[in-house]
Every structure is written in structure tokens, then in C-alpha cells.
Amino acid sequence: MKSLLTTTRMAALALGLAVSSPLISHAQKNYKPTKENLAAREKFRDRGFGIFLHWGLYSIFGQGEWYMTNANLNRDEYSKVAGAFYPAQFDAAKWVAAIKASGAGYLTITSRHHEGFSMWDTKQSDYNIIKSTPFKRDILAELRDECRKQGLGFHIYYSLLDWHRDDYYPIGRTGQGTGRTKHGKWKTYDAFMNAQLAELVRDYNAEAIWFDGEWDQDINPGFQWNFDKMYAGIHKINPACLIGNNHHGEVHPGEDFQMFERDVPGANTAGLSGQAISKLPIETCQTMNGMWGYKIIDQTYKSDTTLIRLLVQTAGRNANLLLNIGPEATGALPATAIDRLEKIGKWMKTYGKTVKDGVREGIIPPQEWGVSTQKGKTVYLHILDWKSRMLSLPLTERVKSVVAYDTRRPIPFQQTKLGLTLSFDKAPSEANAIDYIVEVTLH
Ligand code: GLC
Image (cartoon, rainbow, N blue to C red; front, side):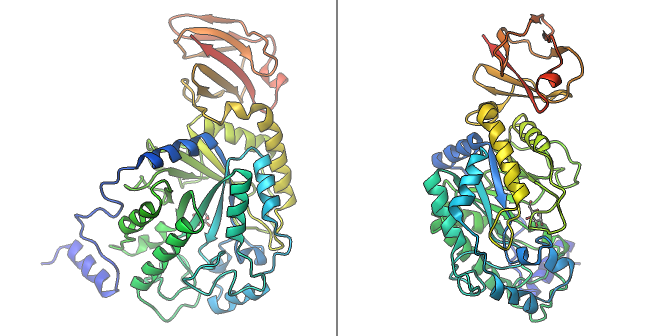
């Protein structure tokens, strides 16, 4: 009798899937990051905060980036909106300047989302911004150039799954109603993806590739994405290019950073982040409102206080925050998003030093009252939830001084073998509603 594994492999072969031996790992085998890659990881950590941009044809419908599959839109009808895509207000210099002023150190832009439309001058398909829209401008190239000019890191999101192409076959758990009836071969889709990725890494200088959609194929047992080849191909072109994959699972060999969706590492309120925390650099992505792509009815923007606290909470867990904006079809960033960027930027001007540029999680693990961050001998306590005027900390290292970050006023402290106790003359929440920062200097 054939084993279940053999049967699955045979079924997969019959579907024309690339199948690798179960003995061969499905990610980059024996991956050893180069010196340049390790340096890029530290740079990524130092940057601390990034802005995610979900932009594609879906912005025209104003219903988020999942509209095509949620409403079972026929791909031939859907693709006609490309002929109306003319984001006249798009100004890469303005976008990058606004993002930079928020204190962010990098941006991550969707090059091709699940809808299958490429936002750059790809040579691998005509379904792209140059060939299929009247706009005919390469927004990816413009953003890359501006990022370089203004000193911002440039990361690229890439969807593994595709609701448009026939050769994205077998169809996955999403996009089942988009009208693909002819089925091509996975081999050509695989070649298409790898050729696109080569363009993005080589010609668009992606400092990181942010993969998404692996989970789409979890309904097809035995399916192999061939990450081994894909990751090795990227690292061959640029060994320093960081690879991350939003698969919600444990990191595959070959990945250079780990991501969490909608939750700080260790929390799993949205049900997407149950994976163990790895030793790689970490990034948590979150929306400013409720959706990634522009959604006209979604005005549920989080307050600036909530967003700044989220940034602090991620920094205290050694993670970057990647905060999303869904640009409009006009080419403008939504006004509320710009307002939030400005407010975060104002806070970052004074306090950015406590969450980025070489700052890592602090010696004190996250507590009920907040988190700690640290650079060298300087520990920053971020008090977000004030309970009492005494604060006892599990810190046994010898302390030299304790001051309020804002006023530099000394804060009385007592140190015993059990830890450090601080006494405040007034509640920190009265002093600073967003995040009261205490600076502790160690001996
Ligand atoms: C999910 C969604 C996708 C979005 C991503 C961002 O994977 O499918 O639309 O781009 O999250 O984290």
C-alpha cells in the first residue's frame, strides 16, 4: 500500500506542482547570512519604525485590497479599471518627506498585491502600471529614487498568491470566484515570480522583500512554494537583502527577519500571531484604521496616543513597528493618515531617541505598567499605565541615577537586593498622558 505521503506527492505531480523530496527542506537550505546581511539586519533594527503602503488598483474601488475576492469579481472585468488608474496627485517626494517627518526610517510598498497587478515597469507581464494604465509612471522607481535621496530605507512587499493569473494553479483558499477557468502550469508562474523578484532586488534595490500569501495554499496538501530556490535567488543577487515572510508560522531557513501581524510579539489578540518568537529582527505590522488598502467607509483611525504607545510597546519587545497607510486612487495619502504622521513625528522629535537609533528592548521585561528600552547603560522606562506613586522594578544591576526624561529632575529611588523602587511626587499620567519616560543610568 502506498503511504499517504506518496499519494499526496503523486496527486501534486498530477497537478503539475513542483514537488521536492520530503527530505529536502522547503526553504533556503544551510543558509548562513553574510556579513553584509548581518549588518543590514542591525540597520533595520536601528531604524525601528517604518511605514507600510498598500497601493494598487484596489484603491479605485475604495473597499480595501481584498475586494476582488470578497465580492467574487471577475478578473477580466476587474482589470478594466487599470484603464482608469491615473493618480494625478502622486508625488513621491511629498510622500517620502511626510513619512520621514514622522520619524520612520523606512517604507514598505506593495509592488504586486493579491489582485495580481504590478505597480512597476515589470518585463514579466503587461498587466502593469506602465503598459496597462494611462498614468504610465513607474511609481516604484520614483519612490526608490526619493527614498535614496531623502535617506529612507526602501522595502518591497510581494504577494505570492495571484487572483488574476491562470498559471497560479492550483487555486488556493482565496480568489476562487474570480473567474479563472483556464488553468496554466505552475512552472510558468514560478518562473514569472522569480523573474519579478530578480527585477525588484536588482533594478529596484529592495533592501527587504516582504512576502505574503503563503497561507493561500494550505488547502492543497503537499504543495511546495520552492522557497529554497526563491530565497537563494534573492540572496545571490544581493546577499544583504532581507527576506521576511508573513506566513504566521515559525521562520523558515533563509529568512532574515520575522513578522507579526496586528499584534505585538507574544500577544495574539487578532489570531494571526501565535508563532514562537525567533532570534531574528522582528517587525509588527498594524493598520492605522482597520484595513490595509484604502477603504472609503473605514474612518476608524486609531488615535495618535494609541499609535505612539503601540510603537513604544513594540520597541520594548525588541520589534520594529510597520504602520500602514492605504493611499487613495488620487495619489494622495488620506488626510487623517497625514495628521497621524505629523503627530507621531512631533513626539518622535523629542522622544525618538528612546525607541530607535540603536535602542533595543530593555533589561526589564514588559510589565503591566509599560516597557523598558535600552541603549548601553541607559535604560528608559516607558510608563504607559500608571497605578501608584511607587514603582517597584525587578532591576538588581547597580543604578547610578534616575531622572525624568523630560525635565531631567532626579527621581528618588531605593535599591535593595530585590530590586529598585522609585517614588514619584505626582502621578506620571498627570505629567505626560502619552508615555512618561524615566531615564535610569546603570553603573
Ligand atoms: C494579510 C492580508 C493582506 C495584507 C497583509 C498585511 O496577509 O492578506 O491583504 O497585505 O495581511 O499584513
